[in-house]
Amino acid sequence: MKAKRLNSFAVFAALLLAGIVALSGPAFAQVPQVLVVALETDVVQFDTVKIQDDTTSHVAYQIFERLVNRTVDGGLEPALAVAWESDPSGQVWTFHLRQGVRFHDGSPFNAEVVKWHFERGQGPDSYFQSPFSVIDRIETPDEYTVVFYLKEANAAFLEQVVLTNAGFIPSKKAFEEKGDAFAFEPVGTGPFKWDTWVKGQRVELARNDDWWGNGPKLDKLVFRVIPEANTQVIELETGGVHIISRAPQSDMERLERNPNIVVLNLPSYRTRALEFNVTRPPFDDVRVRQAVQHAVDMQLIVSALAEPTVMYADSVVPTASWAYPGPGVLPNYPYNPERAAQLLTEAGYVRNAQGRWTKDGQPLRVVIHSSDNRYFMDTDISAAVANQLNRFGIEASVRVMEWAAYLEEVRNGQHQVAFLGWNQSSPEPSIFTDAKAKTAGRGNYGGYSDPALDAILEQALRTADQEARKELYVEAQRIINENAWFFWVGNESRTWIFRKEVQGFNPSPSLPNTYTDVVISR
Image (cartoon, rainbow, N blue to C red):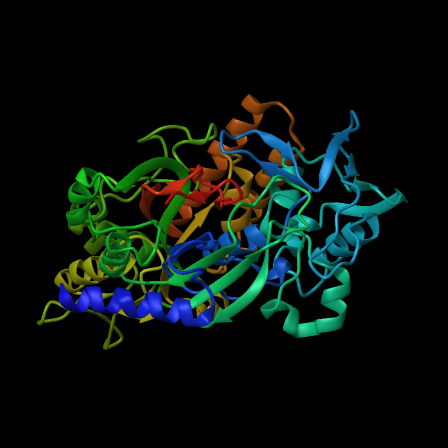
């Protein structure tokens, strides 16, 4: 315990020297309002049309703004647009912009910037090129009006374009002046502006005194990178951080009893799965993908390691979505070692004298990619899966990597199977299906492609009636599961644990949090 206290003091001293914490007067007369939030992984980069991870999105949400925001209760509210409407055809969307807004570099926010940004989102450098391709053209009839003309009606235009990470609007002036450096020195219109990034350690943001909204009350917002859940808890209890988002299950009861700690568990649209790469052996064979799932008791693993934070699920669409058909409706591959053995035999594998599965004299090897605690219990769940596969006779191991390197390797298809998650701000099913399973999906890292599925997903976007859309999305989920592209882990709830002196913190089940109303009571 002594070492832990010394570590906390060292952190405080470092913050003091860095100017994050200041002393004023003969005693602590004027202490700045500095909130410290723990992150599981470091941020990656801040070119908004390339932001793919929740951690970077969380920090970017403080720096940049969208035209429209989703509220904590799931509604929509004005942000950089004060009003918006679509025509009866659903193909023309008009946004009326907030006037008098300036970026952190002093340049004006206007229709020209919006047009430039969304056209760039359609370009070859954008990770959102596929959903943005619905835009036919953008017109700016005046300085504060932007009109999007779509190629066809799209029931999910706001969700797939405006409310994505690529909906964060950067300063055109700063982007053109900084070039590639902009990704590491971002400039937006948000309530906090960029200050410092010490890679692998912390990101510091300063209050934007010229923000158009009410607040923020904080002087500084600091995000500390603390991958280990145990360390996050120690730092929370000793005052090194104010807010954490994970804790070992063994610590939860103690934290809930602590009168100085608040624990919130919120439902969310966060899905976790092992994703197979179907572009390379052995998972280019659907029978092997199915066999691996039958060989592992995923429900047992999840219940032992992750419940109640993660609850077993069986679809790319979260169970809380209106498009989820209910448990037991979709085809799946429950624990059944006998069926797993039958499928591997059909795929040309034989079990040798040592009980190992081989083909043409070569052992069946599986490497599971896992980030270093980016997702709740990801390394532990991956290790448990590998252990069960080894017992079944498949040579399995886990490759644990730092988040940025992991994301790059998986994005480039250098994996066999990867532990990944995705999260959105609403129950709109297209956000999940189109990103993860559509041929050109921005989150399709496994090389998945099924023309029949693509056609159904396109039809669903053109359909306005929700019940008719649900029928299409249920069929899409059926096709996805028949292809066995994903080995489902579950839906993860959102946990926030924070110190009692943090007032005005209203965390969202699925969105990045805002901190404009937060104040630290003394």
